[in-house]
Length: 127
Image 1 (cartoon, rainbow, N blue to C red):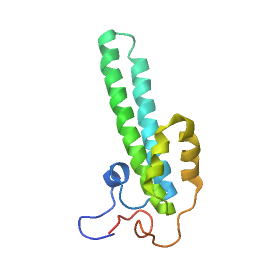
Image 2: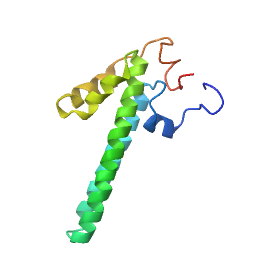
Image 3: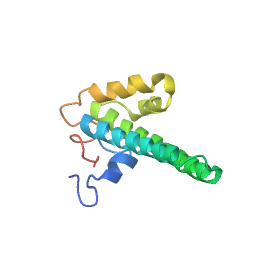
Image 4: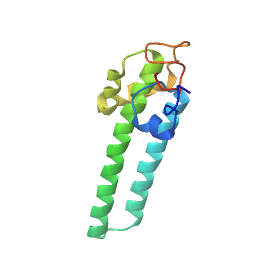
């Protein structure tokens, strides 16, 4: 770990931009949001067509989408840092024309083998 109060955690992995993460953490974090959003859609579909319930579930769905997009960008920034690239490229994850290509590349591109300007090995915070 990088020091006191700087441990890796799920909250850090999903919602903070500093440090580096491995391909596995990137894929697992992305899969978490995909499953959560799919569960929200499944619940909304199963609940029926009552207008009040539909509006409540729609607001939950949009909140879930917003959180997942922010988290996906944070995951992407840390994954780009692991590769040794600047995190600004993670913005392409929210542009539909580029999102699948960038997502695929982040899933398969190997990490830099040594420490880089973004920090030590994968899954640790920058000092």
